[in-house]
Each structure stands twice: as structure tokens, then as C-alpha cells.
Image 1 (tube, rainbow over the protein chains, first blue to last red):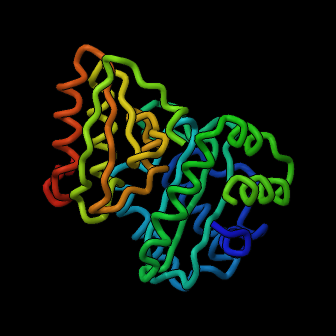
Image 2: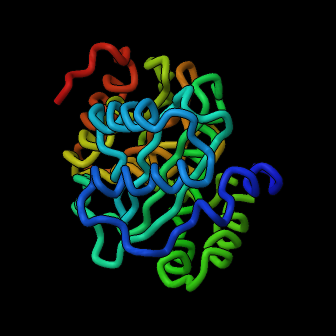
Image 3: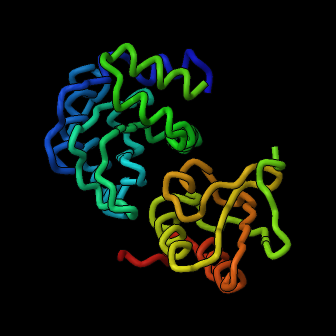
Length: 154
Length: 102
């Protein structure tokens, strides 16, 4: 993925290092609100429904302490990634039973087509590296988180 | 790219086409990873000629971004390797709407 694209997909105001609520659904709403406040979402309820519907099919707790709730929805006009993290971790019902500490909410326009899978797989590939996960857990500012993500994805 | 993936004499592999239209994610992906965790064999999966990922890892399988119609190679090494390949091939060959809501 090229740097300009990522730069727009995850802006600093979409990275919030304050603790999210301790349960999965509240944490998803918390991340959605970050996207709403950043002006990325035209219809909060539609976006929430799409994310929860996807979550019902199978959990997006992909293991190794990561949760990536995501959806294709008309409620966004451009691909958007929100990042937050939980010190204690949130039960995401992942197969490896590890609580999710690194949380990404991915919203892509319904028309996004390949873009959806592209961002999800690139992000997952980056997060397979222990070092990337550790850096994200310890980063002390949104700017640092952003540069870790941009570096890992380009 | 493939040299990082060490092969052993016992390792068997099979190339399978991803049938679910939406690709290997959501229900098909979780069914795949769950099945992979039921075997003793070391199981990996990846596009032909590329480094595979751990088939037991949801993060790994998600990273493949495999779409419907893509070919993937499954590698298995262990006593139940053949059975594991059969089970995993079955999942990749099942259309998305035939997965249970479990």
C-alpha cells in the first residue's frame, strides 16, 4: 500500500490512546465514536449495524492480542482505520483466548471492493511481526503510533 | 521467496482453489483455522511460490487476503497430514452460504 493512501486512511485524530471500555461491544462503539468525531462517518447507526453483523458471523479477534472489527458500509465515504489499545485487554472471543490489547476498527465504503480485503490483509501481515505489536503497545503518542503503522504498511 | 519455507521429506502439499466468493475470511476463515487446530500435523498455507503462514493462526490466514477463485497451497507435515489436508481442502471448497452459524 502506498504511503499517501495510508496517510489518509489513518489520520492522527483516528488514533486515541485513552483506555477504551472493557467489553467488546462498548469498545467497538467507542472506536466508532472516534471515527464519527473525526467526521468520517455519515450514519453512525448504519456503520454500527454493519460492524456488529460482521462480528456475528465470526469474531474479528484474530489472536495474538489483536482485534480488528471491520465492515463495508455506505456510512463512510473513504476507507478509515481507528486505532486504540487496552492495557488489560478485552475479551474478543479469539481462538487463542488472548485478550485483545491492540484494537483496529476498519470501515470501508460498500463500493470499496478489493480495497477492503487489501487493508485488512496488509494490516494483519504487519501485525504478525512481534516487534510491530510491541512497538504499538508501548508507543507514547498518536504520532508515534501513526508512524509505526505507516512504516509497517509501506 | 520460497527458500524461507524449509521442506522436509515427510511434508505433503496440495493446491486448492478458494470457493467462497468473498474469499477466505469471516466464517470460512474461522472454520478453516478451527479445523487446522484439530490436527497434530504442522500446517501452513500460502499462495503458490510465496512464503506460507501458520494455518492455525487467524491473524496469519487473514493476512493472506485470499479471494474467491485464488489458488492456495496447503503444506502438512506429521502423522495425520493426509487427513488434515482432506479436511482443510473440504473447507476451502465449500461455498460460503453452506457454513453453519455456529
